Image (cartoon, rainbow, N blue to C red; front, side, top):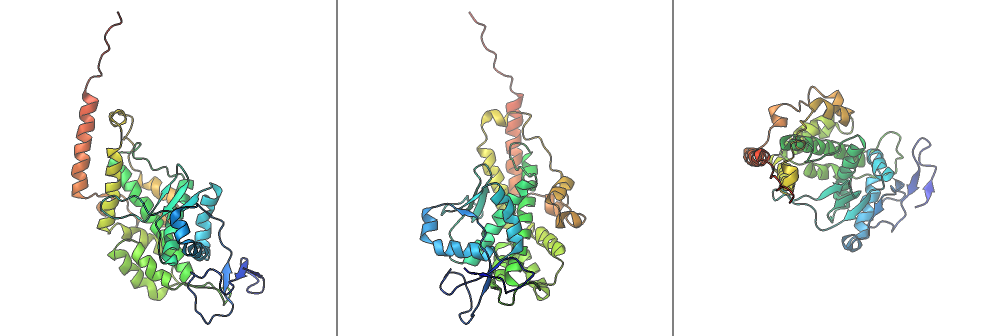
Length: 325
């Protein structure tokens, strides 16, 4: 893509998207000169799924790179050498199929193949938000917290990722005053994000405020998206099931260790670490409210059974070794 200095004196570096390049990027056929920001230098691992749809993955990265918010989120991934893996298998809790996840230990962002590059771009943006959360000090661990606290933190992290995902979609769909007139836009990103945010409440929220886009208060809208996520019962069940699944994999010694599974969820600290919109909307985002702190009845019963087993194991006296001969 040739560099274009004449698009806008106050803009970032802009390039002209040549005819025939990135064929999977949706664009109007009649457009002569198309202005795009340069592609983010995110690493894509060589997988079979990537090779099968390399044009779509490359298009998704170019689309993602047009959002300043996505570019900011990506800095944590670039700094910490995360790589994107397009893979056909991503964790399934048995309740809702997951289309992406982030492995912080191995610094991998996983996403399932997707025919629509705009949807894939938003999926990657969601996972980049999780990388940025780690940079803010979040170290999600089922071992450290009580199981219900782990669920509450996981829900907060997922609500936050969706709030950031929405802003990326907004920036893909609309240009700012400083963008060149020829900037490539993706108005379909708003429809796509309505499907990926998680539930009917989120869809209604975006549809209600859509006539005001892009002239909305971003922080207020992010807080609304965050809170609306908690109304998605299937997703709540999915993330509860994820924690339950992790508990099943805990070995007996750790399960019986009273020093583990002890930390309680701190609402104020969580909002402070999320920062920005979350701190501004702290009164509105009451993480201790029944709507946001509650768990489903089925999960409550399973956690009670798990806790009883843990307490019983701890109560057993340690076996005494026979004296040495």
